[in-house]
Length: 400
Image 1 (cartoon, rainbow, N blue to C red):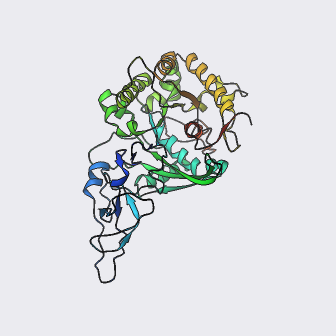
Image 2 (cartoon, rainbow, N blue to C red):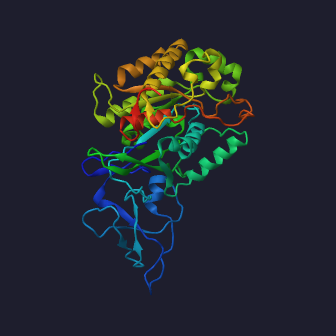
């Protein structure tokens, strides 16, 4: 997910409110000045209201400076200790160091049972290891989201052979704080000067049910804040694959969903947020990731681009991606998903199709057990890298 600075505002990667850079607050460090009593952590009412997170944190306070400056420090008005941790004034979450620098915010949504939780978990792992190494980047978690430990637990469970359960719908008392990763990479600016640039990557595990009605989709503020979206679709939910879903046990484990309905609801929300008329196309780039592609390898020749491993060069391979886009479109059409393709073509100026497998081999859907050979991700990072390449965050080129 990505934030973009506009008219002195940027979207918080946790609550997705666009906030003025002059309104950013500080969080007490817990280290008081000599002779002062230390502040005590306590649940922050705004954090509870915005994120349903009652984790005790140190108090937040407004900056005494009239203009925001990166790296500013301020003294806590209670304990007089020096504070340098900047927080969002809306949800009181710790902001990435580069917040406000124009870093984009990318979002991820998907149909129910599309495998978003598995995909998100593996994507986070890929960003921390092979993907960051490929691009010479550094990555680290930002803030104190409880979901960081949840993602780690999901990954451990998958490594031990267990699939995560379906994500529950949001409730009034359930913490659903995003995982935020800071991606740092050295790049040249317009003058050829090398500098370190940071991008905040924010991941929020939504339940598919939260997007099955127009009103629910509209309520997802993070979609409106995103500069680009990854939409995760389950191939078993496309009309021509119903029988396969039944024989594989997918239908026993999951309820059927409606990819086009969810796509349509997201599209309507984006049109409303951007003020795009129905006779115009949405300009935000849309990466459409078809998950669980390993379950369809019997339909895909071994030499198909879909089955090629990700490139290892330190740039996004546009030619390779376009090749896969065309083959995935052919598969979707073969499955009877022409309605998905038509919707994308008629409503989005820029979209790209991807085929991914978070697990690398088909699990036993009835028992919820992964393949005995372990997790072997296939092209999981490519949708995000395409969005990042569109914004110039990673280099883009053709050929190997």
